[in-house]
Image (cartoon, rainbow, N blue to C red; front, side, top):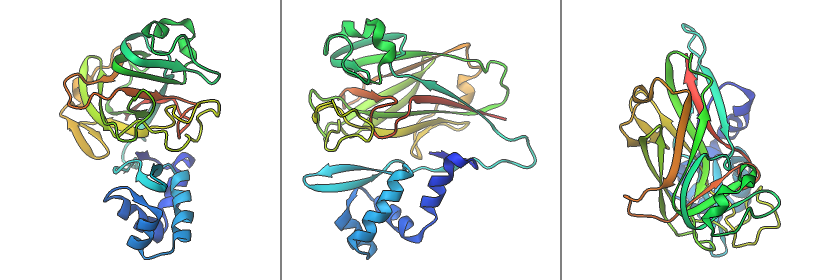
Length: 296
C-alpha cells in the first residue's frame, strides 16, 4: 500500500493515529485473529476491539473472513510506503490507468469459468466461448480454473522520463466450483512478456457477503478477494514487503506504446487453484484494477 499527502490517504492516516489500533495491527501482524483473540492479546474489551476494527476496515487496512461462527480479522497488506515529496526535486508524478476486468484482449481459460456484470451472467457459465461474448466489456468479475487473461493497456506516457516505479493493484482470489476458504492458488503476473512472479491466494471466499457484491448473487458465489499491490522498483519486484522476483523497473523500460498485462494460474507452481479477478461493483473494494506509473 502506498500513501501520499492527498486527501485520498487521510482515512488511513487517521486509522493509524491511535495507540490501540496500532496494538491491534501489531497483533494481526502475527496472523489472522478473532475479536476474542485480539481482546486477549491487547488486554482490552471485545466491544473496544470491534469499534477499532470497524475504523481499520473503513481505511482498507484489514478485511474479515469467517472461521466457523467466528469473525476473523486479517491484514490487507504488511507493507505500507509513504511517497514523500523531495523539496530538492520536482514532485513525483503519479499516473494511474484503470483496467476494467472485462476488457481483456486475449485469453486461454478452462472451466470452471465465467463472467458477470451487475445484472447477471454473461454468456454461458463454464463455457470458455463466453469470454468472446461482446458483452464481456461490461464484466465486473471474471474467474477461471486454469489459463490466463491478458490486457492490452494503451500507454500515453511514452514521453515520460525517469520512471522510478510501477505498481499493479487488484482484488484477487482463487476459484473453486462453489467456494472454499482453504483453497490456495498461485496466481502469476507478466508485464510485456516479463515474468513478475506469483502471489499465493489463500482461498475462494464466500463466508460473508462482499461489501459491494450484488445481492442477487447466491451465498456460494465468489464474494470477495484480497486486495494486493505488486510494486516493480529499481531493486526488484515486491508484494507486501516480500520480494517475489529480481525483475527491476529498468528491465521494463522503455514502456511500449501498448503494455501487455497477463494474469493467470501459474502451471509451474505447486498450487493451481484457479483465479478470480474482482472489478468495480464486486468484492470489498469497489475498484477497478489499476496500473500506476511513478516518475520524476
